[in-house]
Length: 90
Image 1: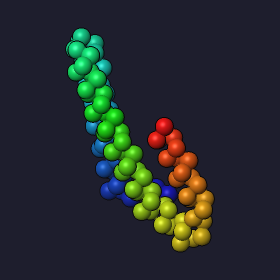
Image 2 (image 1 turned 90 degrees about the vertical axis):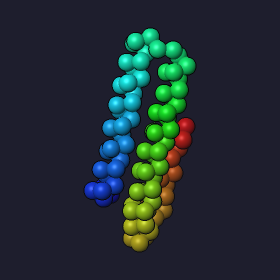
Image 3 (image 1 turned 30 degrees about the vertical axis):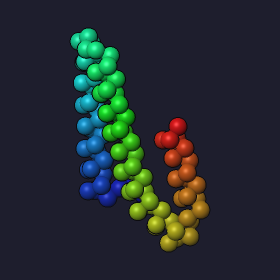
Image 4 (image 1 turned 60 degrees about the horizontal axis):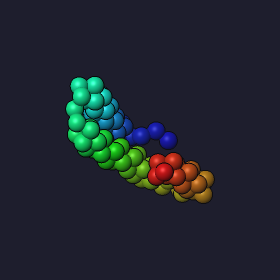
């Protein structure tokens, strides 16, 4: 299943924000900023990645999983979701 256009846009915006943040951290490191500052910013990126993952999971549950349950293919959809969560939650 593909994301709804508005949901896809929200996820893309979040990922672009993360991309810019990571680029800024790289520049901070290259400029010799303190490791404490760099680590603080890395923590912010990790939180932003978790937010993006939650957005994707919410979309999947609200769209794909509900649709799969309606089509009686829910077991496979649940299995796919569990596998994806294992990767994200490592």
